[in-house]
Image (cartoon, one colour):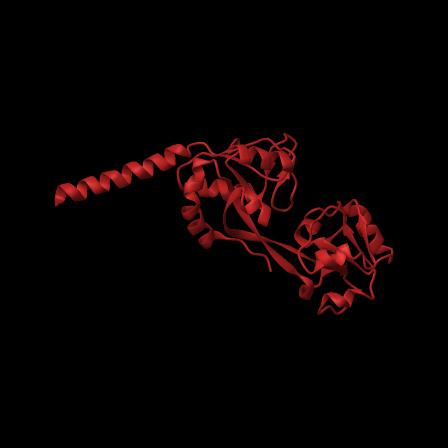
Length: 239
């Protein structure tokens, strides 16, 4: 009986060791610029809370991760599909991506909603409340519902290519509100402009889960259950 027990323990140990050995130097990447989660620094390396969160997990497993150089987001996803990158530190889940990547539980969320000047707050209860207002949004952002349909309908809302122009339109009263990814907006305010100048209408906020996603060709995806347990104890949610 003791012999059987000893063999069982040995097999479990060997199996665990193999899983960790197969994920000995995971390559981490992500979007090149998704503040506040990820930014590209002056050395063309990725940095930010998303990378720190993943690094912290791997350190808890005695694994040294490798950060890839910053690349265009489409290139990162292509590298993940081919198994050249093990995981993305931050990714939104879509139906198309679910078939390509293995996702963890969400470790934080990305918030979308209405920004106004602090002294020009209006009541918002439903999307129809914007029909009588004029707004602007950052071109290229994919919004969650109900904003996605609202933007596509082009109801008194204008796409703008940079944050500075959005702020200028709001400050000069050309629009009543901005539709933005809220935490990204505040993280990218130009120098000298205080976030206290603006107000995020809480009833307008839609929170979208942010996940860590693994290449389905990576041996490291075997650690997803362990990473999920780590996420449950350490996840960061903004309200």
